[in-house]
Length: 204
Ligand SMILES: Cc1ncc(COP(=O)(O)OP(=O)(O)O)c(N)n1
Ligand SMILES: Cc1nc(C(=O)O)sc1CCOP(=O)(O)O
Ligand SMILES: [Mg+2]
Image 1: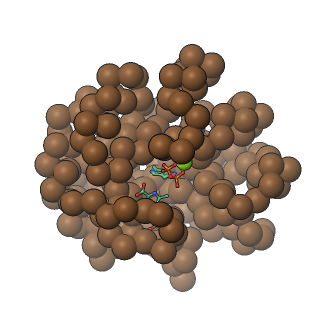
Image 2: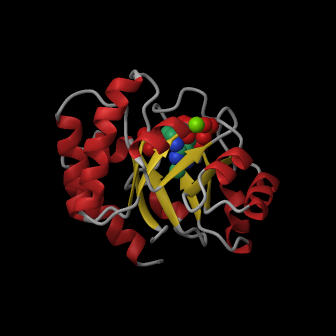
Image 3: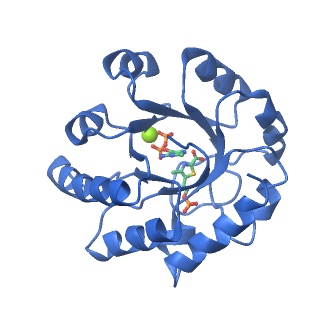
């Protein structure tokens, strides 16, 4: 499974247009899809997750869930993304062999080194720019990405990334970028996706 390029992380499911945006981005070539939903109850998350998984498979894109091993299990997703408030890496690694495990490493290089050693499939540093999507996101210094090339697993950047500031990140040896609102709030999500991919093609 390709773990590089443009990583679409969803907003919380809200209505059927949610799926239209995701499919526009998938058909424009987004490389990875993650379902991130902090507010809906499990019954809604399972239903929305099933539809997202089907869309991801239609476009042959890895499907990742955020936070929840229960959702990983019920949806039989390709993987999970976890952070500091989520179930322990070791538990998920042991309980779900073969699944992709991505880890938030915020602005902490040593956290990245720790999880690479533990067997993470990718790590994500951020937030590099101001974001309205994650209330408790902490800003981190872009210079941390000078260390990206030291990792043997994919390194993603996340947080407030848009088509205007992404070039600042592409100066570093990152494997890809993860975005929410730059695609979900775009007038034309497909066009925004293509713009990101065009810029990423120059470095990947
Ligand atoms: C690729 C990627 N990076 C970071 C996150 C953040 O996840 P979230 O659950 O909002 O916060 P943490 O639990 O990681 O602190 C993500 N979902 N995906
Ligand atoms: C989900 C997430 N994680 C972050 C981190 O810093 O770990 S920032 C963030 C929100 C990203 O959304 P947008 O692209 O709309 O800024
Ligand atoms: Mg989390």
